[in-house]
Image 1 (cartoon, one colour):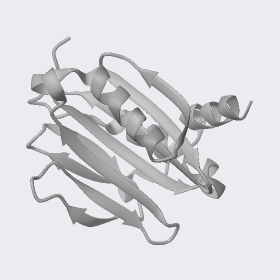
Image 2: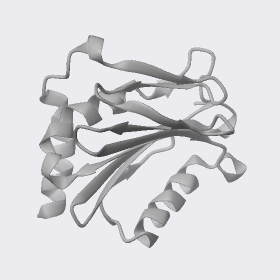
Image 3: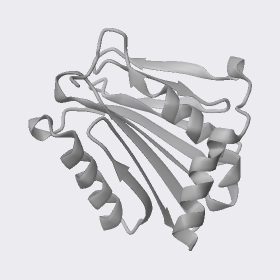
Length: 164
């Protein structure tokens, strides 16, 4: 029952009003060819040395956000997602929701007082883009609209269209 509630809470964010559009800012990664919108209150904490992505923090609520691109082995997006779900389980996260398709994937989990939501999309040349948002369980409903907007905004750059 808890799994159903958590999944419903994540999906119900589609009906909630989003934060004012002007408060969001874009993050683009030309190396992998993807863009995503960063929510209000998140400041860049660190950019990776190899330009794979960046991490962001929201000091007001303790949430963290990681965005990155990757080259899955043999360009197999679905296997890469399954491996990442396995890494989360190995790190004692209980996976509450998982949906994997050839073009995109979403999964979420809980551990103690924390939850996370990850979204991934397939990109050009067999690469992939991910974001992973982690926050306190007590803020679950506060992040519904944020997650919905970010999931919709994670997309290939105009010059990067994945194979159908």
